[in-house]
Every structure is written in C-alpha cells, then in structure tokens.
View 1 (tube, rainbow, N blue to C red):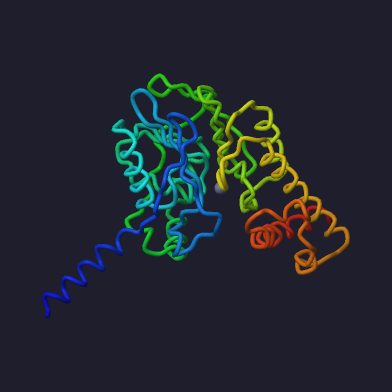
View 2 (view 1 turned 45 degrees about the horizontal axis):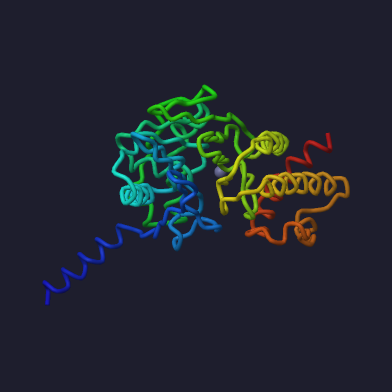
Length: 303
Ligand SMILES: [Zn+2]
C-alpha cells in the first residue's frame, strides 16, 4: 500500500511540474510559423500563454521571435520546432520587455539572444519582479523560470543571421522600445505588440502618440502577412487601421472627459463604440487603461 501511495505521489509530482501548453505551430509560409497565444489575461488555466511567438527556418538554423512567458513554454516551443526541423535554434529576438514575450528565454541555454538596449536593460533590472508577479498569477507553469537576459544588442537596421537577412524596425509607443521585424524573403511582418489583432490593446507602458506614429510606419510596408503580438495573423492592413482608431478613441475620450470634469466611473459607463465591438477583452483593457492614464491626463490638461 505504501509503495502504491508513493507511486501516485511521484506521478502527481512529475506531471505537475510540466504544464501542458498544447502548442501547435501555425504555418505562415514554407519555412515560417507562429504560435498563437490566447486572447486572455494571465491565469493558472492558460499558464501565461497569451502572446504570439514566431519562428523562421533558414538554411542552417532557426530564428525564434519571442519566447513566451515561462521556461516550460520555451521548452515546449523547442519540442514543437524539433518535430519540423533538426536545425538548431541559434538565434532569438526579444521584441520588447513584457514578460509574456521573453521569460521563455531560460529554456535556450546556447542561443544568441538579441534585443534593443532598453529592452536588455529592463530585463536585467526588472526581470525578477516580473517572475514574482507571474508566479502569483500563473502558478506552477512558472516552475524553474529564471531570467536569461539578451546577450546581443540590436542597433542596426538589418540583421544577417547565418546569411538570412531581416529588417529590424526600431520603434516605440507600446513600450519605450519595440522592435518590429520585416522578412523581405517572405514579406512577413512580425509587428510585436505594436499590433493587436481584434484584441484590445494594453497600455501600461504606452506613449499613445508615439505608438500611432509607429503604426503609421508599419502601415507603409507592403507585407503579405502581418503577425501581431496578440491575436491572429492577418493578410490585410485592417488591424493597423483599427489599432490607430482605438488609440485615437482612448486619447480623445480621456481628453474630453477631463474637460467635462467626469470621474473614472462615468467614463467607464460610456457604451462601447460599434467599431470596437468585435475586440476581445474590451471592457477589461479599456478599464485598465482609463484607471492608469486618467490621472496623468487630468494633471496634464489642468496645468
Ligand atoms: Zn507587450
């Protein structure tokens, strides 16, 4: 009997160590894929799988764009890639410093990890705080997740990885530094969190005017497929247009509310505009943005 209980405990422990993300790569072109993250907030049920990650198989290696929210996610990404190719994941790009995009780095011990200087510094300085926060929100899926900071700083506008050329767009607005990646070989634009497709934008570190300018830059690119940071890939310019419209709506609502002397509750009572009815998480994210940003708008406009 004792032996039986031991086996049960052992099995429970060994399974509980490994949250199953059930990842499935979605094919974008011959050698390009992405993993679609759920349009939800961090939870124990989703294990923090709420952002997209992408990869490109080149002639000698694999380039991974963002690594998800935990070591376990990174490891499961690796397993999925190994089912498609035996080439090594030599290169990783971290698009920005939000934890759903870089905490999976810890699964990749021998890859070169590229990021802009600001992103690299943020990960080095504040990465541990993100882990503490996510352990609370996500729980066991975070097991063994440690900070693995980028070891390569991205400054140039093009990156040549084993002969595979990528355009690097150094932009900002979603955070203080957001990298978008354009692959001229496939005409795929990896827009990072500068674009959310039908998923309401998150603004905890946003500068809305800069974000709009960055979106206008992305709009000029003649891409065939757009891979957003959150939401499904798209073949149209619609997601960019909708994101600009949303940011303008948020900005103008906050400005007019200060003028009218509304309080936060009165702003949140406003009906959802028709054009954003199809956005997921509108209520939660709009509320979060208003609560964070309204005091700043009040301060600025009452000067
Ligand atoms: Zn983000």
